[in-house]
Length: 239
Image 1 (cartoon, rainbow, N blue to C red):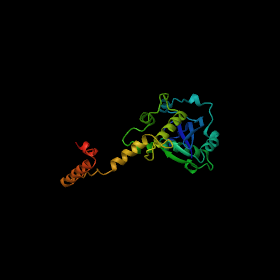
Image 2: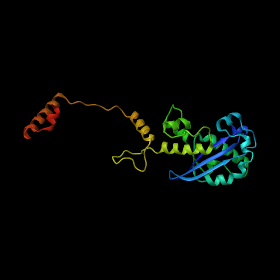
Image 3: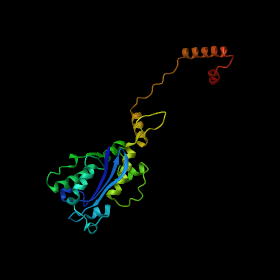
Image 4: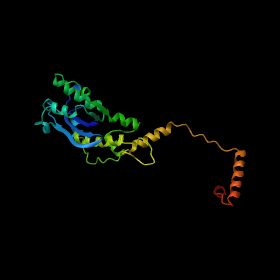
C-alpha cells in the first residue's frame, strides 16, 4: 500500500476568506515503510499572511516573494499523491485548502478525494484516547516520539513526525501469541485494545466448592498419599 503523509501551512484559517496554502510537505510510505521519497514546496500566495499564522509557522511574505504559485506546481504535486492514501492530522482543514486551490485552477482538476483516499489521524487519536489532548505535541509525548526539534510548525517536519505517529498508532499487536509479536506488531494500540476489551467483559463468576466436594477431595488425596507411600504432592501443598 502506498501512503502519503501530508501537511500544509497556510496564510490563515479559512479558504472561504481567501486564505491560501503557502507550504506543502509530504512523506511517502510503501507497505508501512519509509521510502525516502518526499515532496516539499513553499508557495507564493498572492496575499498577506495573517500575523497569527506567522506566529505558528514563522513563514513571512518576504520569504515567499520568489516562490512559485500553486498553479505552477499543481501537476507535479498531483502526480506525487495520485492513487495514494493520504494520511493527514485534522484532514478537513488540509483537504479543504487543497480543494480550494484546485477550484481556483479552473478546468477539470476535481477534488482531492476524486483520486486519493484520506485517513484522518485526529479522528483515529480521539477514538484511541477519548477526552485527552490529541494534537501532535501531546501525541508525541504519549507515544514517546522525539519532537524536540519542532520549535515552529513546518509542513515537511510535521509530516515526518506524523508518519512516525501514524505507524505507532496503527502498529499495535493484532493477536496474542506465545511466540511473541509478529511482523512488528507492537505498540500502545494493543494496550488500548486490551483495555477496551477488558472494560466490556462481564465480571468473572467465582464458584466455590461445597463442603461435600471438599470432603471428597480430601478423601481422594488421602488415597493418593497412601498409594504413593506418603509422596502425594498435593497433600504437601495443602499442608
